Length: 227
Image (cartoon, rainbow, N blue to C red; front, side, top):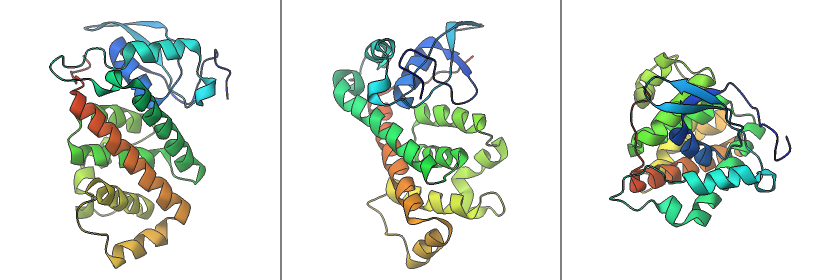
């Protein structure tokens, strides 16, 4: 793990409008070193590579960005619940970091992790999280062909592996927790393709993204075209 004042690097950097990346940073729990990068329609932006430092690893600069960017630009007619209750929002970020780290440690792929986040966001109608995690999925090697049919994955063949369909079943169950319980057949399919640790990890991923969906939607975080 890099020290607090070093750049955290885990993958390919992505350019975004500065305010967009500030909010993305807060939701991803990452640490950055920004560099100017011009864009056609949005002015200054930064190249950012998110990572997952522990709370003790975060530098003072990142803490300042957190305080500055939680809800800058949100709809002024709605309360930005992250900015109004920053301690609670920071705790949710920590849970996001922990759940994603646990998923990787039990052998779940980055693509599967992003499928969980995208599918829950589709079901909840969260444009903010959909855009964020679609970009992340593509960066991790996901294809537009698979993303195009994700919302109808049960109607497809040969698109998704058994561990992915099991993760999607869990995600839909958690997202509609007040609905029907998973059937015995569904539980059997899930246990055939996922270990107990992986099942628990997918549940936590689904729980956390559902929480983030509710933060973004209830705060009416702005979603505008990137270019």
